[in-house]
Length: 388
Image (tube, rainbow, N blue to C red; front, top):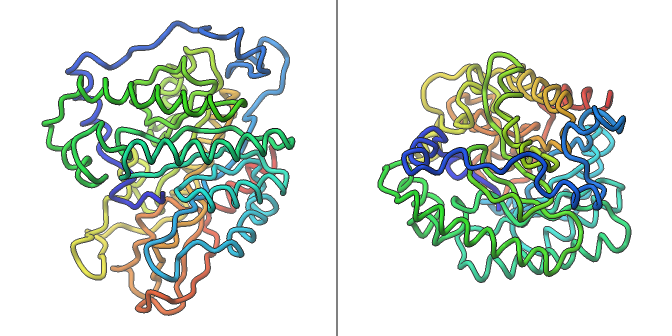
């Protein structure tokens, strides 16, 4: 499911503060856990290249491609558009990996098959949200069966059982919708110990479902501060939106995820295209007033595609220096956040993390056709990926 601005982020500091007060923060196993298993699978832990002489740098360079249905008739999923985008991802962005995410098994599998046919590595991640837990697990199982068929046919594919379950899955945090769960978390009234127990139970169920249908590498995409039993998975997946003024800060922040002795994949990273967006620690989306119709930009942010490009490429350099397993920039395109160069007050692309900007032919027509154009971040990332 495509993450809208409100869905994408909540204040990580608030979440971590609550977790710390419940005594949940910092629970990690010693380095080397299940290392032998990973080596038998052919997966060396991050950093192992230094000791073994294996390939150094970032192993898989990718981008997130969301296959949600879209919020307007004009942005509904299009197989023709998807196939064109996948070719661009390979030939112009020079990525070797696509994080195929969202909901709808048909959309997910069609996109994964196209990426695999084009020779790309596939990180297949179903993210059905605001549905009963049974439906979410059935959606995962059906997607996972297709991933296994791709794997048996020789495709390079990893299966992720989902993304930030506490946000997307009802029954972990109080609230029937993502927005209600966000509000409850921000209110400070959530029982974090109870939440963690529910999160652990569902994560274990999802991992078991994934294992039952898929026999390749299994992962999960957690928020940077989440507490996850990574013994359940082959790959540690982290959605990373941290800000530090120097690369060493990022290395320190990510270093704790290496203690599991497993490959580390950055399943999301990025920022928005305005001055100061990287410093928001993943809250860059929060500059749109959705109570107004049409939605309106709050304050007076200064558009800066250069800011986005510098942040994204700087992080790629950090990930490469750490010899990480994979990094997928969030995201390729956000059709429902159009760029309005003629009306800056309604330029909601400012709140988008996409490497491209959406331009709608007729902004007042929900069924209008649209196209995307690359931002500076697209070109800068393409140069980095091409060098690798």
